[in-house]
Length: 333
Image 1 (cartoon, helix red, strand yellow):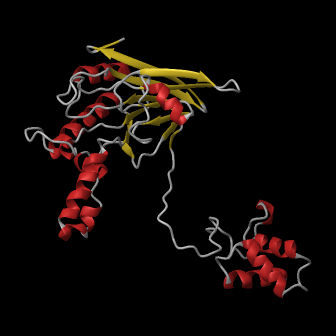
Image 2 (tube, one colour; image 1 turned 180 degrees about the vertical axis):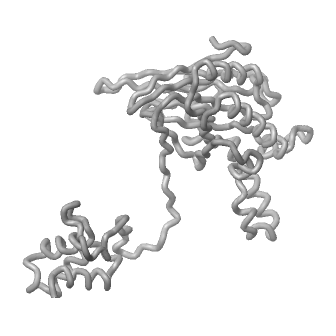
Image 3 (tube, helix red, strand yellow; image 1 turned 120 degrees about the vertical axis):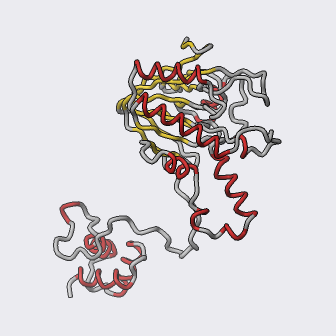
């Protein structure tokens, strides 16, 4: 029996054991066959194809690992921990809009943004949160005369059709706190009707499916669960991901810098701002906040510091160029 045969036999008996731990056991029980512990470990690595591409076994590939074994040497109970992957846009030209709040959208402001993107074509339109308002899903006192949530989705989907027709590009649909109201509302209502809680159709109902049902041909991709977007080194977030009191400073962009510490852009606050600050090693960090594309004087907050706006960003590799636009009475400033 060769060293490789012994290593394969031990790996079959202990498939989840970490390599070094298994090597110790194998060497202790077969110390005459292996020169030392490292020799035993090397043979285990060889049969798993971990000794470099020139040492991948050609005949016996039983133990070649497509992915590394999970590290759990102490048999700790399984965790509900989830990954938090960043959504990456490789490069190109993107349009960046935020806080449309359909059906409380501004027709004049959206028209100005569309006209700019037609004159300056984009590869991707990034809707950076709060495309929908979902007034009916608010936890605050609601006016029963306002539109139902199903009507809000219908109107929002009509607007998505306009974007697709006029811009002809892919749409990245990032959830904001208002968009999340839809699923939160469903979770609450399902718990109130126990008979529905176990229905597979109800459990899988979400905003993405509601849009796809109405617009099966829409070229869009959803970014949910408060995931960040990376565009050539620029971090794109809605603004609610870090908590409600993050951007309390007068300058929203400065608040984003203080909390995030890297170049980025957010919406959420309906206000255009910019902050630039060099690091101690001479790197330039700039943060921005976007204006909104919704009504500026809603009933619940008629006096505020909001303004209309959107952005155009070009990027390649790890470099980008940002244009943060403001709109006044339907005109780009």
